[in-house]
Image: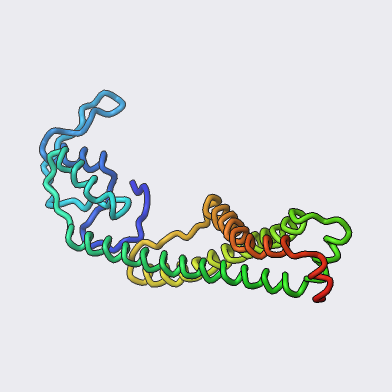
Length: 230
């Protein structure tokens, strides 16, 4: 009975099965017999043997755990630990490089937001002067620029997160085509809601921090000087 299919390259005669089925087959091959059927009949005894089993872990980090479980069951096992360690080191290096690129992008984005708001303060000196002349307080002016920075951060965070997800989907489709051609399992690209929320909220917080200096500068601008230089 076929219970599933796996997109994985396998040699002739290889069988991929759940661990309980493997243990039952091992018991049968050693002459212990299978469990009794539903009608009370005893399981049959077999005289077949198998040479080896392939155990597929759910991830690279779980290979050692899988080996320990197999050892506890009395099954000798081996795994290309050196290759796995090399792959993990390579993945850590890639994560560090991507994190560095992301940090640089965040710094550049913060500087861009601060520069844009400082330019807005210079260009809107007359507006700031008029607001203060009609009774606006410093905190009111500061709140206006902070709200503008917040709106800029939210919109930019949403657009950037969706754009990054679209790029990831495109790259994932290309990678899956290659893996399918090699007879390997593909990868799944998804956008969890916590990641979406973190991207948008993080951009908003960054925009608020970057816009705090221009907002304070606009709030401290004297109304007389703003009207005089306009």
